[in-house]
Image (cartoon, rainbow, N blue to C red; front, side, top):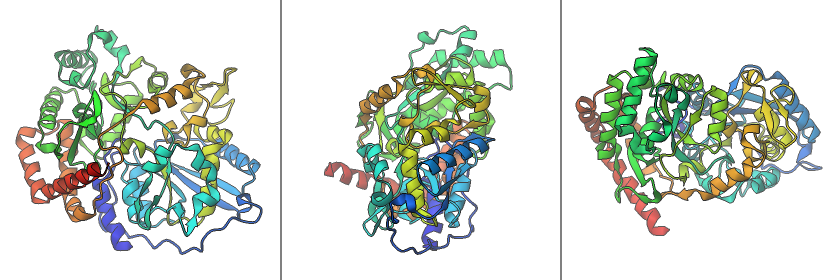
Length: 532
């Protein structure tokens, strides 16, 4: 197990297509995890699972802005007691900047203090990969079915499509190794436009033809130039996450290897852009992107920190949250325009680059796993069952306390106190089952019904349901990591000249087995498509 997890760490660095964080995994040589403690199969305690022994359940969240949670934790624990449990809730509020390093370290060292941990398709503690190496507990294990014993309500509360996406090949067979986040599983690639600034600069939002091609238009370049001229040398009008932005502009499905171009037709995502999958660095689509992003970087439109893996995420979030940008992009969540405008104090607009899509990556876009090293597995599943199904508990954890962080309105919506939310503001879409939360006032009382309709309207990409098995090329992926990590951020942010540096990158990728990875991926995709 130790050897497997050590290898998983190296491969996991490749398998984190970074849409939300940009930190490195622990340095090589970090201690390998201890084996999960052996436990007898769980059984419901006498009187039901509310009679389980007392336990503190520690939950590791992502994307949090939390500096004061004492009143929230107190209220959550009071609610858990009202619900008849012996659970004490203990949160770890990971941020966008620190979550990935801390999460991977905790899993790699077999930390027994963490029970539940955020996981998904895009963090370094990648759901599929860490399930495969045994870091996550199988929840529907026939020999100890924790979901059946302690999570029956959560199973019914989350759509089958998401449970299907979370049913993967893990270390003890095909099964469920995590709790899907019930949020937006249909997603759109969209622009993120600071329309307040765009209007101040004398541009009309409606004069732009908004799609992925906008990036290459003269109007786009003119607006960037005017923003730089008006706002000064320290203002960087194009704010982005390099890996995600390149994927958005190229209309590509999320790729766990960070090597391949999984393109789709933005008007009909069920159609692949190419019948044969290639390395992204061999495609005309990425070559065109890299040339243009280099042009914008040289012109001074891009913060140099975007080329530094350790600095990029914090710089991106800071510019976004303070509205110090003109153009950006986002994998859009329904209703985000209202929330973003309120939080940033601007008119934030999100014109589409593509139609709404459903991919394996989006269906696995948020979730939580039960750590294989948890000493409180039954109680942890019991907690998740209550969190996903009890509106009062869910609202406490996501919104805080009525009268402090928010007030309730007669129509069932809530109005936030923006000052109070500065000290307690978890990432809403990472808070379990968001459909049992009250909607914000600006979203309206029918918001969740509209949100569900948006999800249901999503079109599946050509690779929906496909999960790449890296085992046949595990060694190649591990050796490709260094080259990808050295070049990925600089070349996709425009900091280095692709004319000079792309040949070196391609040579190193070829020398380390990129061709074998491409061939294996195509082989598995063809087998998947043939079986559909």
